[in-house]
Length: 115
Image (cartoon, rainbow, N blue to C red; front, side, top):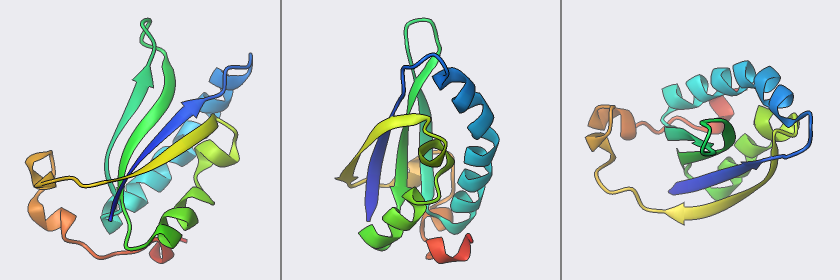
């Protein structure tokens, strides 16, 4: 099942520094999730000055419980980069029209393989 996860960054004076510090761990985890076929697409949400103010991610997990397992280890949540986030179930039709092959999206790897 696919999920759209939209993370809204905190707005306090230290928020940008927390994002900067958490980003390497966020990218490392994202790479693992991509190998498993759980992370399909991501984008930084920006303001009119091009500064990151959040994230939008298309994720694929077998169950909502697996999605929650990822969220429990997501650095942008643990490091309080995202002040809040929303989850929407979505249906991505023919995702292989993006940058990956169809086989990438057919993977069945799960969140339990990341830890």
